[in-house]
Image (cartoon, rainbow, N blue to C red; front, side):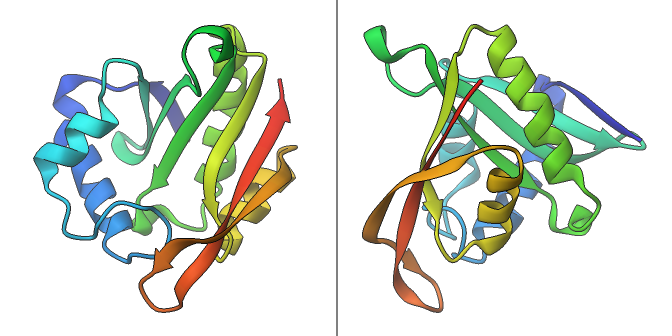
Length: 161
């Protein structure tokens, strides 16, 4: 059973392990595979973010955050980032946290969600976001320097809440 909750200070070591494993491949996130724990945790837990974890049997299996995509007059549109532990892939956690986070974003007052940079070759993520109602509203040519494929495009994805 999955339990989704706000991230706590003592969750940070487990969150770092997930982040480190996800970015190591250089194929899904813009972060350098050799990014340090200090820089990644400062980014992931920046003051403008609401942080969450998903646990399975008491073990953290995923981490994600929500925030306003833009300040001021754009603050009603949310943004988010999600990472699932490689050990938990294929268990439906991504979809569960996606659906939960959309409800949470609405509860926080967002009226829509926009993902500014979904790597086009990350077919699993693109399929997941489309399955929960996101549309591709734009494509950025050669936006991502994929570890194996070289420059590849990124999508902008959007959904009303």
